[in-house]
Amino acid sequence: MYEGAVQDLIDELGRLPGVGPKSAQRIAFHLLAADPADVRRLVNALVEVKDKVRFCTVCGNVAEAEQCRICLDPRRDPAVICVVEESKDVVAVEKTREFRGRYHVLGGAISPIEGVGPDDLRIRELMTRLADGTVTELILATDPNLEGEATATYLARLCKPMGLKVTRLASGLPVGGDLEYADEVTLGRAFEGRRLLDV
Amino acid sequence: MYEGAVQDLIDELGRLPGVGPKSAQRIAFHLLAADPADVRRLVNALVEVKDKVRFCTVCGNVAEAEQCRICLDPRRDPAVICVVEESKDVVAVEKTREFRGRYHVLGGAISPIEGVGPDDLRIRELMTRLADGTVTELILATDPNLEGEATATYLARLCKPMGLKVTRLASGLPVGGDLEYADEVTLGRAFEGRRLLDV
Image (cartoon, rainbow over all chains, first blue to last red; front, side, top):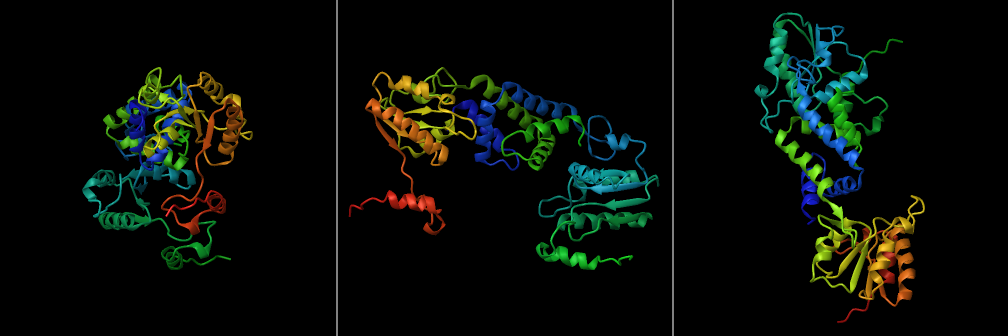
């Protein structure tokens, strides 16, 4: 529809997740009119990310070295591992400043529909980490959906016989949310998990 | 929040129009996991677009040469110019296959709020094109919103004294739309512009 280079860019942008044809067009025209220096910065960021970023050989998190910053940090408690699906979940947990242990990034969740089985996740690497007995607690922080729950159940069955304390993040009402807008499953979970108030 | 290169990419992506922080993160992780060849194609498309694409010296449309394909096409009627705000509007009109004249891309619309005045648009270039008397009709196809209407009115006042036929695209109900979902302004326009049915 457009002349060569513009259409090529629209096509490439349209392949990105969540970018439809209209957004791709809008971004392409924005870049066309943008300062060449801005576009160069984006290009450099793309090249750098593919050049520099690897995955931590220990936990599977994104890293710019053999190991990620968290695995390299001696102040992080090696006795507790928080298991998450993706690197972005690490960032989400880090933002809470609640957790001072280490992570293990699975690279997804078990999903028979999408053909993802335990062997497609970094479960073998997790078992290797648990082998020497340093780890005493495993916090399963996979997503609170079907796939995440299935993965947590699978891991719990695998790890409990090893004498580990295996925990799962609490489900319930989002803080600051409104009870009437909570979906029934979440509200049900909130009832199940209700706790005594110490007053 | 992330290590250097990943955060840099998220920042750069987040500067694109319509890409919020969550989308930027999602796209960055998609690219991290993507085939390096795919990322290279995107990088090339970005570089090419800034290297190759210019703006047609005649009409202001995107072009890969001194002039755009439409201005260079001898089959396009030089007597009719369709004035649009942006290059993407040219594509939209071209898709209709209704128009066989030439275009003039203004590069925006008059908007006092955003500080865009007539001098910021390619209006002087339009006047130059109209000077030799080849053009007999000017179709004002700016957007049917406040800024587009203001721009159309401004151009009509400027060009009518030159003896040109100046027209504006019809406003009305979208074809295939549902009357009850039309907003009141559009419905009002549809009444104003009602036409006799020849049956």
